[in-house]
Every structure is written in structure tokens, then in C-alpha cells.
Length: 180
Image (cartoon, rainbow, N blue to C red; front, side, top):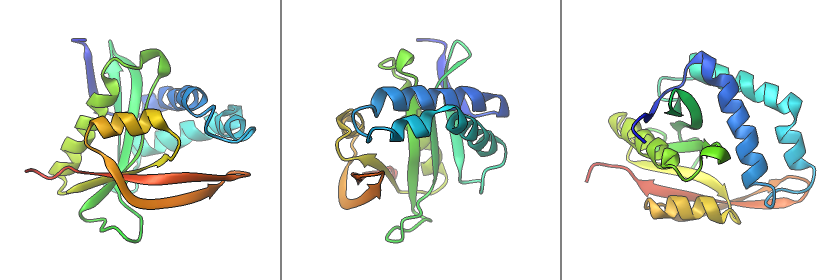
């Protein structure tokens, strides 16, 4: 796809990013989250809150090391990734970054957009001096684990349990992004 790429998000991308998030979560998390939770985090009120959050991420991030990237195809936003210095207390935020989210619109899945977003994220973070990249994923999310695993990610042995009306376990994955 010659007209596909990745660029920093702009203010005008916030609505598309929020819409992609809602569609991707409804599609990818429908079997992973308790009944009702998905409706709450993807409903109209939540979607508006996400639009504001992504608008702020694009225009006024908490630091220069917080970034929101979008994947585009024919000038259409088809996916996004957000990253920042890691905040987990056992990690060094000067050397370790967190991939906060990486989502592709289900309509545009399996066209290389996720891989382009992941590569662009790693390139930017490497330039910023980060050596390791981590992310949290639902333990039962085989799609994400397989995608990231194919790019060299693996569990680092850390897990957490979220209370979503019932306990939902997440695991932390990591990868080395340092120049070798």
C-alpha cells in the first residue's frame, strides 16, 4: 500500500482516534471483558471523553516524551499508538517506555498498519534514548500476544489483576529496542 504511513497525531485526528478505539475495543475485547463493562467504556459518553483525551494527547501531551501517532492510508486515519515513559515502580522511566495502546480499525486490520505503528514507535523511542518497551495486555488476548510475539515481545513475568466487576488478569510484555 504505497499511500500508507505513520505520522504524529494532529488535533483534528482526535475524533477518528476515539472512533477507532471504540470500534477496535468492541471487536477485540467483546469476549475478554465482563458483560456491561465494554458498553460503559465504549458508549456515547465514554466516546466523547476519549475524543477529549486524544485531542489533549495530540496537542498538549504531559511531556515531550509522550506521543500519539496515527497510521494513515489515503489520508484516512486507520490506527493509532500512544507511548510514554514507563510508570511502573519497578521500571526505570529514563530507559523504559510503555506502549500505552496500539489499535487499528478492524475494517483496516491485517494491512500492515499495526506493524508500521509498532516500528515507528520503536524508532522514536530509540531516538529518545529508551532501551526497553513494555505494554500491558489482557492475559487471554491471544490476538495481541501473537502480534507482539511475532515482533519479538515476550512476557516479563509481571502480572496485575484489574477489578472490572470481576477480576481480569493482565500480563506485562517487553521487548528490547536498543540498537544492537
